[in-house]
Length: 402
Image 1 (cartoon, helix red, strand yellow):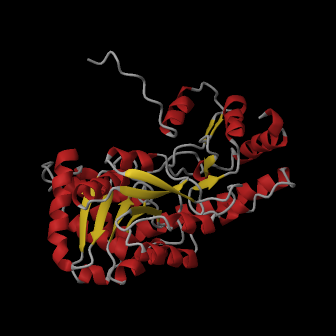
Image 2 (cartoon, helix red, strand yellow):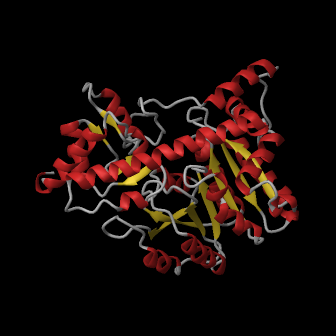
Image 3 (cartoon, helix red, strand yellow):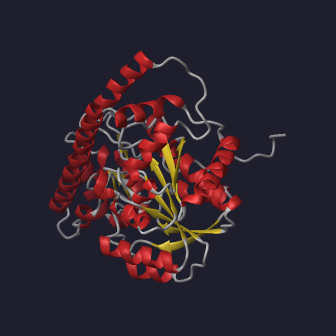
């Protein structure tokens, strides 16, 4: 029955990671998969997480199933982290939060809810976006429509054409918005641009999905949430998909949250019931251990304070790396403008490199980056920075050969 199956194309990010692992070059450098790395090139387990796991081991009495939507404690803590402790949507009973397998799981449940229960047929997504975004929504049955996000030279936002494209949106369409630390470009909307975008979303009666995978990696936990908090405080409905992969380093634990905000509290029970019905058919119940880590860290004042310090350390390290990366490139290629790298936010940078240049980096220098030119800034360290910049300079200077 499987004889006619064809080999599926490799994932644009994890496929490269597999190539990297198979590369025998001892000097190879990986700038592909979006995982934070320390100076020694490892993805750490945060100390607050280690301490939480010790407490879990001491207190845990069962490995029984969690409820379909996770525990009530997880839901409350995540909603307050995303929306703020005193947010009116929480006080008014307008929120429903479910524990999901990562931000990816949250996005898929949201997509199924919109398509199956809300009559949504189409979703607008910025081009470029995270490679998995369109696949998730297409798999749920939604038609994906695109709006431009970058200028042709990929060195800034094309906000005018961004808004022009959304003028074609129809009432009931969904729109996916990266809340902070845009993946893959690193270019975020300014506060003023956010206000214009959300005014258009409201006037068009669109359904916003805020992909909030990097809370705390932009300016801070509260600062990064300011735009969506204001939107929901004004009484609007929408969806937030958050992840603890980056900000708690829980990549392999797959911990995320789906928070739905309704315009009226009377809609909350029906929304949550439909979310639970969808979850039951996909993965039945969420995994226990990662959720317990999140609950423990967020509910223990000492661990929470330690987490905020560790998160701030990661954020500041990435800012410093971005500054050094732009500076070294400017030294080597003074006739090229790399100042845009300093304006980007978060772990990723659209480097401005062409596909051919990226392929040459991989084939000649064993430096792996996504073919779109996206570089994981957190993969840079003091040992490989000069090597990376030297190789990029050679590719840029010999563009005709790249």
